[in-house]
Length: 144
Image 1 (cartoon, rainbow, N blue to C red):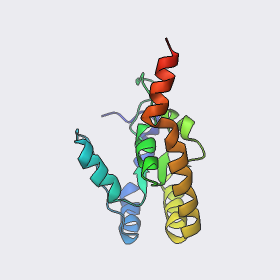
Image 2 (tube, helix red, strand yellow; image 1 turned 180 degrees about the horizontal axis):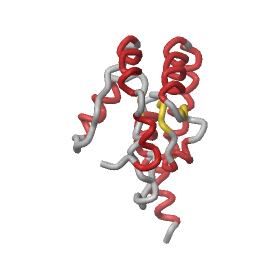
Image 3 (tube, one colour; image 1 turned 135 degrees about the vertical axis):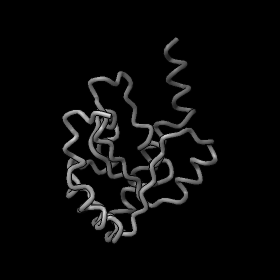
Image 4 (cartoon, rainbow, N blue to C red; image 1 turned 45 degrees about the vertical axis):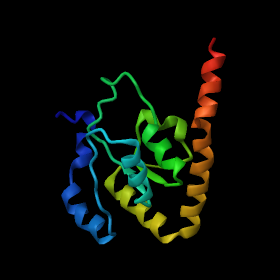
């Protein structure tokens, strides 16, 4: 798959993989559908979510949403993510990065600062309330 202009973001990834493994990072790729309980189990098992998709061609995609970040936020899980247009509405509630080096530095900071981690965990939970079904249904009803 062509990685568009962002393809350079994978350059050097292999050399950084060892650094990630030293930080006890377990990389999981999801590219299939799962049940609701599978997703709940997944989020209950992680401490930090990483969204790194340099292959996304934002010129070709028509629908953008921050669902990955919102789902993690609802469990109080901070996210480090390669910036995407879809994540604009979550600004201030995740850690945007542009390079692997920035990602590793942010990961180290989150893992070594319990105060920073807890602050973002609480902020994430509060932000995720905006996406609660009661709020969404109320907005939907106002469309009529």
